[in-house]
Structures are given as C-alpha cells and as structure tokens.
Length: 394
Image (cartoon, rainbow, N blue to C red; front, side, top):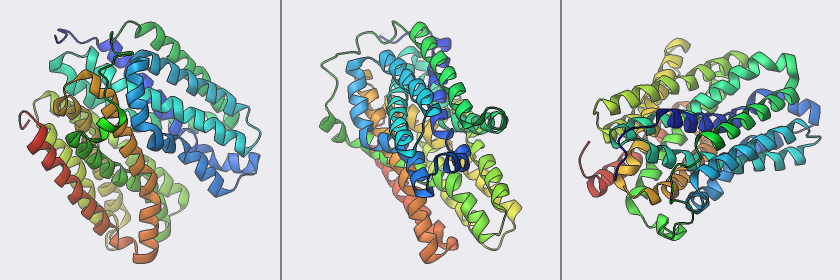
C-alpha cells in the first residue's frame, strides 16, 4: 500500500546526504596544485586520485546496489557517510601520494554506498503523487555538491589550507552521518536481508533498466565533456587564459542546478518524463555544434555551453523519476540504481580521455560528430524503453 503523505524533512535529509557525498568528488580539483607541491605528486598520479571515487562506482556500482537491500538502506547511508568522514580526516593527515590514493578509495566506497541507497529510500518515503518530483530533485545532488565544493574551497583554502579543508569536510560529513542515523532510523522496514532482492546477473538481464542506464551513461559522457573538457578547449583552441576558462567551466556546471529544479517542476506539472529524458540527451549534443565551432566568438560559445547543461540536467532528473515506472518493485530500485551509478560513472570516466584523443587526431570542430552519434544511440534506447516498459506515455 502506498503511503499517503510524503515525509519531506526525511527526503531533504537524504538529499543532503547525497550532496555531501558529491562534495567528496569536487573537493580534490581545487587543491590539485597544492597536492602536487606539498606531496610531490605527478599530474598523472593526481589524475588517478581525482578519478578514484568514480572508478569505485564503475567497478562496484551494481554490486553495491544489490548488497544495500540486504544491508539496509538507512544503514548503508549512515555507514557511507561515516566512511567518507573517516576518509576526509585521514586525508588531512596524508603524507604521501600512495596513502592519499588509498584514502580516496575509501571515500569512493562511502560515496557509492550513500548515493546508491538514497534514491530508493526517497522513493519509499515519498507518496506516489510526489515520487517523481522528489526523485527529479535528487538528480541535482551531483552538481550541487560539486558547486559547493568549489565555492567552499575558494572561500576557505587561503585561510585553512588543504589539510584544514579536509578537517572541515570530515566534521561536516560526520555531522550529517549523525543526523541521518537519528533522522532516518526506522525508515524502509523490511528491506534489509530480504530474500526477494534480485541477484547480480538478474539485474543485468533486465532489458528496460539496462537500456535506460545506457542512455544515462551517454548523458554523463556528454555532461563531463562540457564540465571537464571545456576549460582545455577554451584555453587551447580559443587562447583563453586557463584561470578564466576554469571559471567559465564552473559557471557552466552550475547551470545544471536550475536545470534539475526546472525538470522537477515540470514533472510535478505532469510533463512527460520520457520527453524530458530526450531533451536531456538531444539538446547538449546539438548545442555542442555551437560550442566547438571556430566561427562564433567566446560569448555565444559559453552561453551555448550553459544552455547545454541547463537542459542536459533534465536527463538525470527524468531517469531517476522513470526507474519506479519501468520496475515498480521497491526491492529492485536499489540494484537498478547501482546499475545507473555504474553506467553513469563509466560515462564520466571515459568521456574526457576519449574526447581529448578525438580532438587531438580530428580537431575540436569535429567533436560534435561523436556527441551527436552517441545522442542518437541514447534516443534509440529511450524509444525502446518507452515501447517495452512504460505503462503510459507520460
């Protein structure tokens, strides 16, 4: 039986847990030069530290999704936050690159537990009429967390240094872990240790969820091109100072926040989630033609990139909202969300090196060919999902 009223304070607490998890991804990028100097690290090694959290999701995403049902959603969130808090404290004490890399792997495990368990918990504590809206809002957790990491680093780094920044991170994450332990206890009863949870191979055999996750991975591939590759493009192809290119790329990434909120509002107003997912894939790929053209001046190029991620944010919002519709069994949500994390993280992991290599060999102006081809594949997946799995076209 569906619950009658949504517990919005608990939904907000789960959302904050996700934002804190995303903050762990964003905290490293602003301190890269300091880590290189203080710990004598090479740029490739720092790159490994940057991607370590994402790599954990690629390798263990579906496993974590299957396991969290048996462990318990709330317990997974609390333990995930606790692991991230411990990792942040250890990072503040790091004396070498190898130690920091191991610590980031620990943070990656905590991140994975948290972001896999939060959406199914939100789905269970939201009334049916609010579920799509609540899950669409959840889709903004990653850009919000990364934006907060950027803003916090800019305001605190000169005062407390990178070690102090990690101590603040540890205290903040620990506080949210305590709040989650107290505020979410007793939620989602009967999920832990439930024998009906599908196994790992069964998740990969679910055709509609797999197609939906492939389309989401295509979105994240395009998203990370705009968010992470854009500074290199602006600096290399347009001779823009690197600092200015970085600021503009941060502005571009932040456009995903109002985009997620707009998608949530549209879903609440009854807009088709499938149509929003299409927009989230088609628009960024189409606007990449304007972004990577050598003809337009910098102003329109940056405006096109901002618009690409604003409308691109419709994709994660719609994807999370679609999961209960393609498989309404609540015991399947966590494993399917683990699959989503696996494909989404794969897109962000391989996007920058593939597009970078493409640009080196074929030129920046040809990058939209790749992105448009991928978008076509994503749309084909969504069409098949709509045909096979959705009860209604909305």
